[in-house]
Structures are given as structure tokens and as C-alpha cells.
Length: 116
Image (cartoon, rainbow, N blue to C red; front, side, top):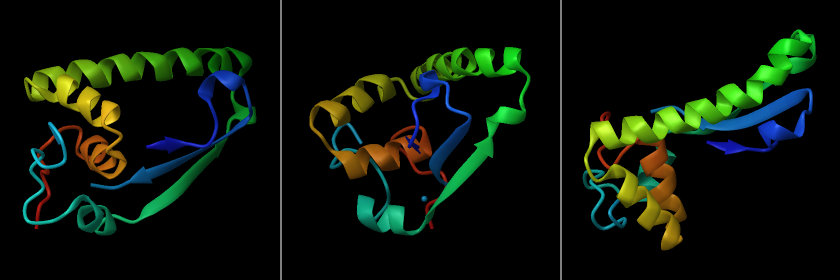
């Protein structure tokens, strides 16, 4: 997921690019016979926006905290779903494997659950 706005910045509008369901290193991540580019091409990106100005002030204040909590839950989920997922994601970041990282984040791990 790519965010065009930092949730901490307090702007009233947010925009996110999301991929609907479409790697140790990319060589070690299992995506079937498809390359990361081929896998990403199966799931077109789209933008999702919301006007947050209609939320009550307390909700707007709470939102960045909820997003931060969600990131912690994502990491917990990764560690529970597949033992090496957290370390694998760190290696993808360290080796600047952007496409493989995007596939990994899309699947929430190294294995695609909608391979076809």
C-alpha cells in the first residue's frame, strides 16, 4: 500500500493506492511461475480517498494512533502466519527489492493465496 499522505500530518483528505489480492529475496519468494511484475500486473492499482473532515475531532485525533496500532498488528500477523516473514520482509527492504516487496505486502507474506 502506498500512501500519498502521512497519516500523522493531520490533513483532511487521505489517498491510498491499494492492490486487491495479485520473497527471502525475490528468488526465494514463491509466486508460482510468475515474476513480481507479472503478478502485480494481475491486480491493477486504484486510488481510494476519503474526506476525513466530516469525522468528529476525537475520531480525527484517534486515527493516526489506530493506523500505528494496525502496523503493529500486521507485524504480529506476519510472524504468526509464516515463521520467517518478518525477517524476509526486512531483507527485501534492505536489498531494495521494491517489486518483490510490493508482492510480499500484497499477499501479507511470501506465498500467494490466489495463484492462478
